[in-house]
Image (tube, rainbow, N blue to C red):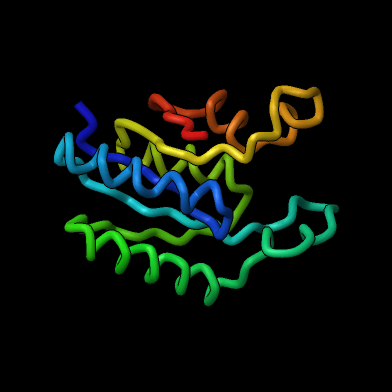
Length: 137
């Protein structure tokens, strides 16, 4: 059913909490797991995002390696991908590229307020995704 699962990760608590459900899902379906992390590149004419949103390629590589090792300890062999760009577009492009059957994401809980829905990476991925998206609270 879910041959290839894409799990975009960042340093958020939500991403870390979603990892255990991803492990369960991948074990249940015997899925190929792809970990993706995006180095955020500001849109043309925009300032760099504040704080950790703008991670260096080195920080992203380290994050992916730590996640891969943690999953390996639970018997999951994951592949990693690092890309640069705007996260919602990169996530959907990679899902299409790898023919993902499912994208699994943690949700930051911004709610469906007007500002939260417009700015949410999760909401944009849901609307642009070439495959089903599982959002974990």
